[in-house]
Structure formats: C-alpha cells, structure tokens
Image (cartoon, rainbow, N blue to C red):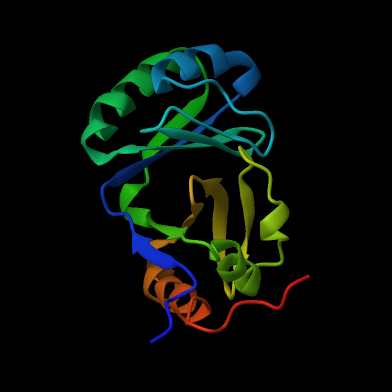
Length: 172
C-alpha cells in the first residue's frame, strides 16, 4: 500500500491567545509579556514552544502550551495597563493541525490559493483551505494550519483527502 503524501495531526496541547492593541504603543510591553518579539507584517516568530503571529495591524495570535495560557493571559493584561486593548483566550475557538512529510506542500497546494512551495519561512499566510478560513505557516518538516473549531472536522477531512497516497501533484 502506498504511503500518504503527508501526516495530518491535530494538535490539542496548544493554547491560543488573541491580542488586540495599538502595537506601536504597546508592542514592547506585549513582546516582553509574550516572551517573543513582535513579528513583522505577515510574519511569525517562534522560540520552539511559543509562536507569535501577525494577524492584522492591531492583532497578534500567540500559540503556546495550554498549561501556560492562564499565567500568560495575566502577563499580557498587565502589559496593556493604561492602554486600549484586548487579550482573549481563543484556545476553544480554533483547531490546529500539523501537515508534515515530503509532500506536505502538495497537500497545502491542493487546498489553498497559495504557492505553498514558495511560502517563505517566518511568514504567516491567512487564506482559505478548501471552503474554510485558515492561517498557515512553515514548520520544520511541513506546515501548521489553524482554522475555526466549528470547521475542524471538515478541515481534518479535506487535509486527509488531499494526502491520499498516489495523489501528489505533477512536477512543475
């Protein structure tokens, strides 16, 4: 039996915090509280256990071990003292998948209007995977995908179907 193009794994041990604020005013304090530098526009930074991604000019998404969410929420709220901002635990609102393997880029390319093979490292791309909103970025050996929890089953299905053995894209 042929091997799947990629491994699709749901990541349930990750928490997510949405941060909304004027990054030009509160960016340094938020970076210190998050433990990561504020990413450039459309960027994502990581230290191995945490990822901080640029979602819009006033929005960041912090992925971190779920066990660290509560303490980090407090740190981020403290960092916003005196500033207009919002820090919210979004862990239950999103689903995270890792797509890894030698043809992980083919799996993403089948579903998103993105040249996944040319997606730069440290670049977060907001897009669609099939019929659902998603964010994707490169990880060692593949890609990380975030979608809404309400579409998690659908997202798992389309990712798995796109990885069916023998379905790799033709060479370019």
